[in-house]
Image (cartoon, rainbow over all chains, first blue to last red; front, side, top):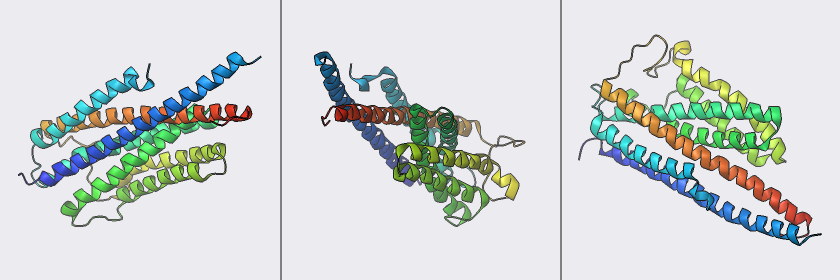
Length: 51
Length: 233
């Protein structure tokens, strides 16, 4: 192992942290997408059925 | 089409992944050891791009805050909110990586030197922007206060940049007006590559965070419309 192995692992811990943050953002976006689709379908359905 | 498969998002995800792997390769296998500091100098390739991206994000926040105060359009507030959070994230990386380098180089984790102190001040102002949005009486009031605070925070960036010149601090100055580039070509290439990786990561995060903020607005509007018809979402 080289003397800077601690730096290598430090870097990778940060990259993994950032990757986890990206994954959380993607998951949140997906959840919001589904929720928005559901609400918009209900709203558009009502408009079609309405007077 | 699933909105997650937005081609720009997918392309950025792939590009960021490849650039991050490339950055690790260049930092640990391509760049040479610095003669005086040795291995710990490699933090430089992380610390400097993180600082540059934090400053860039602060300027995005500044532009979006001014645009929001001018037009009161929510899209600008969403962009300002996203840029503030990301500026805080990268500023935190700067404030963590700096002391890791300072301990072996200066013998102390922290010193109340001008550049460090003004950077800490930027972090605190950005945190205040985030908190103001969270705890304001109304979203509109929070956005207005955070925009004003964001403009004040952005004024700190040029002060950080010139702090060493103005107050003769001990923080190293690698680049700046009248400075001769002291980096070896391999070091300069590695720094440029890492900066590119950080900028692409920032673009991805800003895109995702702003889309989430816009979606939250749309969900809230649609929920209110349902509520007005006596239904719950």
